[in-house]
Image 1 (cartoon, rainbow, N blue to C red):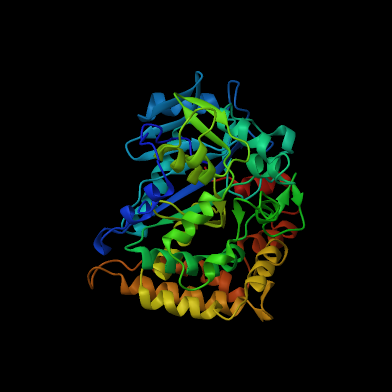
Image 2 (cartoon, rainbow, N blue to C red):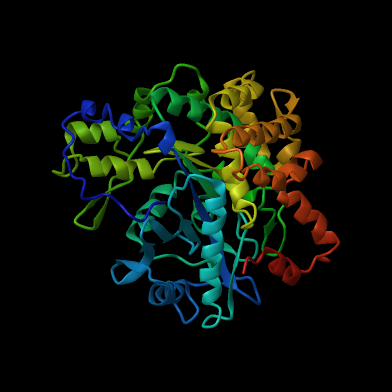
Length: 454
């Protein structure tokens, strides 16, 4: 839910044709393609696991102030409140419930991602002297706080979204305030490459969500799901979220994705830092008729792009959004998986062939079943576990083919970290639930220590 906008890109859109080549402009030469991460974590009370408030002496606002003061970040303000930090290309933004998100600049290999995460963790550790009562936890759904106990970040964007979602998602407040994810961003080299990658990612993302399921606790006890985050997202606004299975059909083009966006109802626009609700107006109608005397601009379109939340989103790059928040040592594995699959044409074709048999209905059925069944789910009558196991091997093979020199490090080391999941047919959530009854002795305090990342 992007904080930073391109309001300054205010070229007026005279017609839909002004957007005809929008996505083409962001294709990159193969030697320039990179991979990026966005990783969300929950700041919580070290003793109780309860969500940190936004305000107060140990609140999120004070944490951000300290990071700006000590670590060289520039504060991004809205009505006097810090809502994000920026240092070079790196951003730290806030989700509506105070989830702290690292948006790291794209890099060429996964070892660099590992280093980005290490540096971020070191930054969080520097705060502990001044905030000893605060820690951060990794989970796809808040494992301790009730909804009313979570923060509310004072951003006008979030207020408008919350109002919109009241009637468009049974669990929209839960989504905004109690979920956390790891997002992987990948580049594309052409229209054909982008749409093939979109198709493959949509075909595989449900299986990857099962492999990385990590949200099985709510209010200090098991919640009956392996990925409660997915259960919540499955009940979100269908106009702008979910598995857009129509893009698993062959022959799709940028123009098809543009149609999807033009037909999507708008939520807001931004003028001179003022957020203006736009209830239900399709973007194509905004181009034709304007709104309250305002004309559509390129900045409006990019803001509209940021309010589309499908499992895989096409922007200036592809965003793959389906993994629960992972422990820091597994975040590079999520990136390595997608880099290995998508950045080699032959490997990508092999990966797609593993799921090509499924119908759109079967893909949707799988997606809805992952939250509860994880790697035990079925795709069109076939178990997904053997597919997950083969995908892990393909990802490793793809990473090996991407080595720049014979003596360079092989990123497949990050796939090794998840091989035990695929081989055992268990996700991080499965292992955590087993440990809950043994090592953790069903003790919420022990669970908190296990989930803490600093």
